[in-house]
Every structure is written in structure tokens, then in C-alpha cells.
Image 1 (spheres, helix red, strand yellow):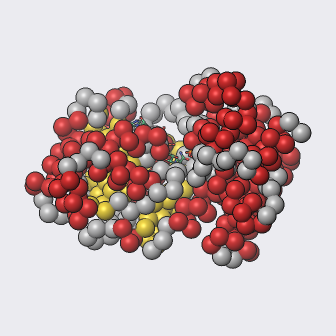
Image 2 (cartoon, helix red, strand yellow; image 1 turned 180 degrees about the vertical axis):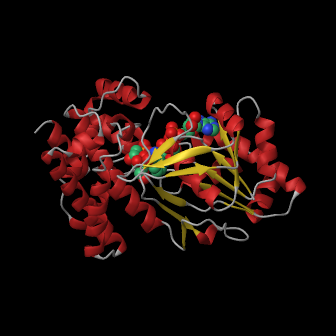
Image 3 (cartoon, protein in one colour; image 1 turned 135 degrees about the vertical axis):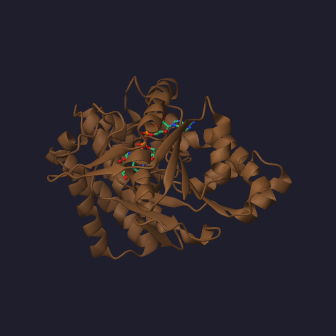
Length: 380
Ligand SMILES: NC(=O)c1ccc[n+]([C@@H]2O[C@H](COP(=O)([O-])OP(=O)(O)OC[C@H]3O[C@@H](n4cnc5c(N)ncnc54)[C@H](O)[C@@H]3O)[C@@H](O)[C@H]2O)c1
Ligand SMILES: O=P(O)(O)OC[C@@H](O)[C@@H](O)[C@H](O)[C@H](O)CO
């Protein structure tokens, strides 16, 4: 069985690649990083190390790579012969890979009538749906119709903390033991890919929002507040009691929004929160706050981990969130010269001021109670 995976980075090699191998697939990684692609082709395998007290190593075999910049035709051929396609490139990169995927699917229409599923494993709501829209935009009307019949784009939620890392072996990747991969089965075409570790559900929305608004909300609190207090890693920031209290508070607020929206059991949700806080305190992982805080404009977007739970909280309780507002205020001041979005954010703040910058990034209307709550944190 052949899998084509876009993005041979942390989550690509450390999570998706590992599960595909264990499910019996040969995985062809597609990436723009030539050094990684060469190494994958030279060695055909790499190690995934579990970051735990008693660490274990899984050697992922049956892998190869294609550089999509220098060998786009090989990517098209790989898609034409694939049994499953996955991506983990980052939400902002999905439009950039959609044309090549469209070419691959068009080629496939000429040579096969086999259905195919394409799963975007990104931290966003509706990632595969967004990829599908972008792919269809590169196809003629008749190809769009044929693609809609044969190719599924089931949305997915993936959870495993994989920090940025520099290892002597450039392919080796250290990951936390925990993982979760949930896929919307109603959008699958043909037979569901049989991959141990995937949980198929009918409606992904509660799962992706629970993950994004708990794991990633808590992570964003730790990253932005931790960075503002001078901490370099999530583990270091988590030792600070004031940060722990802010995470607790923010996750109670996002939890309230989730429980009221989806009817989650209160006790089970509290257990979920506690498990996540323990994961952030894993001493065997060194995860930089700059990785977790990367892309602050995306993270302050309307449907993302800060604005959406905070505005849901207001809608459902009639009160303004305290801890989420504080985190949004801190995120607006996030400075990192190595992060393009952080630089752009500070340019926007300098030109427009905090309030207007927040309005345009978050999509909130002027006078929205969340804007007032955030501004109150910035200028009490
Ligand atoms: N790292 C984590 O803890 C984690 C966990 C869950 C989900 N995610 C999500 O997974 C996705 C990837 O994150 P990551 O941490 O692995 O990032 P990463 O930067 O380690 O990996 C991204 C990879 O995509 C490649 N890439 C960039 N442009 C490309 C293109 N045009 N074509 C093909 N490949 C391209 C990069 O070279 C890189 O190898 C993101 O959506 C992230 O939110 C990450
Ligand atoms: O990948 P991002 O930039 O959306 O978010 C940064 C981290 O919060 C994220 O990568 C987590 O480590 C991951 O989502 C855990 O499953």
C-alpha cells in the first residue's frame, strides 16, 4: 500500500509517518527541504524516539522522499498511484500544495477509477475541506465533478507534541508518547484507510474544537505569557505558579464554552484538562515557546484557539473571559524577529494601535465585548 505524505517535518515524520508504517504502508514524503528528502532516499528509514522516563525507539521503514520543487512530475505520478494522501505542512501552506495535488488527481482520473482519501492533519478547523476547495479551484468543471465523486477530503484532528529539535541524526525525531488522530468518516470515499491509531467519527467538529481549544489554547497561554516573562521553553514556563494559574483559568473558560456548546461531561472534561497540563510538564521534552507561539496572526484568527473560545464564552455565559483576554493582550505584544507573522503583527500594532490591529486580525466588530476586555488588559 502506498501513502503520499506532504511535509516531512516534526508531525509528518514523528506521528503520521510512524502510524502509516505500522499500518503497512510505504510512505513517500513530499517536501521542499532537499536535505531531508535526500536523507530519506539514502536510508529508507528513520527513528522515532518516545520522550519518556523509559524511552523506546521505533524504526520507521519503507520510506522515501520527493523534492516537490525539483521533481513535481514525480509527485504527480506518486499521487496517481497512491492509496492514501496525508498532509502536515501548516495551515498557511495548504494553498501552496493544492495545485500539485490537483495535477496528481487529474492524472489519476485518466489511469484509475479507485477512490482516494486526502487528509489534512493540521491544527485548524476544517483543514481537509479548505484543501479540497483549493484543489478544486485548479480543476476544470468536469474534472471537479469527477473528483467530487471519487476523492474524499475527510477533516481530521491530530494531537501529539513534537518539538523542534536538532539531533546528530537529522531524521531522528523525539515525540511525546501520547497521540490522538480523529478522522471524519462521513467524508470518506471507498474503503476507510485501515490505520491503527485513527479513531473514525461521524462529526469531527466537537473533537477538533475540544483539541484546539484545550491543548492549543493552553499551549498558547504558556507560550505567550511564558515568553513575556522571559521563559524559553514550555517546561520552564510551566514551573511558574502564576502561569499555571493562568492556564487553569483560561482552560476553565474555554472548557465552559466547549461544555455548553457540545454537552461534554464536566468531570470528563476536567480530566482531559488535567491530562493535558501533565503533558506540558513532561521533563523529557524541551519545546521552545517560540515554536508554540509561532504564527501569532494565525493564532489570533477568528476560528482559532484564542478568539473563538473567548467569544463563545461571552456568547454563552454573558460574561467577559479574564484569562483568555489576558492571553490575547499578551499575544498582541509578542515580538520575535525570526517569526514573519510576529514581525507583521508588530508592524500592524505600530501603524494602527492595539485595538484596530486586533479588530482586523480577529474579525471582531468594533465595540465587541472581547475587544473591550482585551483593551482593558492593555490599558487598564
Ligand atoms: N509539532 C506538533 O506538536 C504538532 C502537533 C499536532 C499538529 N501539528 C500540525 O502539523 C502541521 C505541521 O507542523 P510541524 O510541527 O510538523 O511543522 P514542521 O515545520 O516541523 O513541518 C512542516 C514541514 O512542511 C514542509 N513544507 C513547507 N512547505 C512545503 C511545501 N510547499 N510542500 C511540501 N512540504 C512543505 C517543511 O519543509 C517542513 O518539513 C501544522 O499544521 C501543525 O499545526 C503539529
Ligand atoms: O502547530 P501550531 O503552530 O498550530 O501550534 C503550536 C503547538 O501548540 C502545537 O504544535 C502542539 O504542539 C500540537 O498541536 C499538539 O498536538
